[in-house]
Length: 87
Image (cartoon, rainbow, N blue to C red; front, side, top):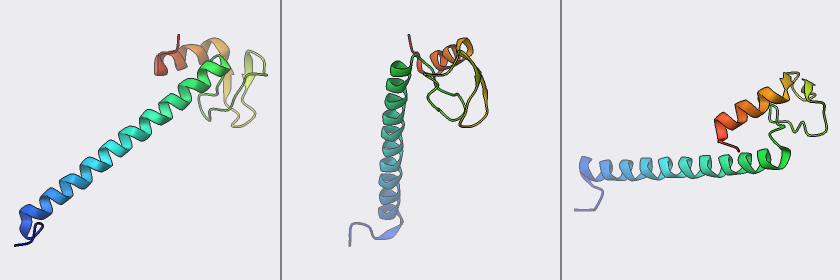
């Protein structure tokens, strides 16, 4: 009998594939969160909440030039700190 013959063999193969997919997505999420956290540190939380455009050189209140979303620095910092636990 071959290793993946019958329903139980295929079940293990499917479970293995799902496990690899889960851990791959978990790793991608970890990398993306680290990248965003680093960007937040570099820009002092001056990122658009909608499109993540860097607002570093712009005034404390205004409209994002990339997506048109209104922003206020105090609100940006509070939202990013809640989401990424930035000090």
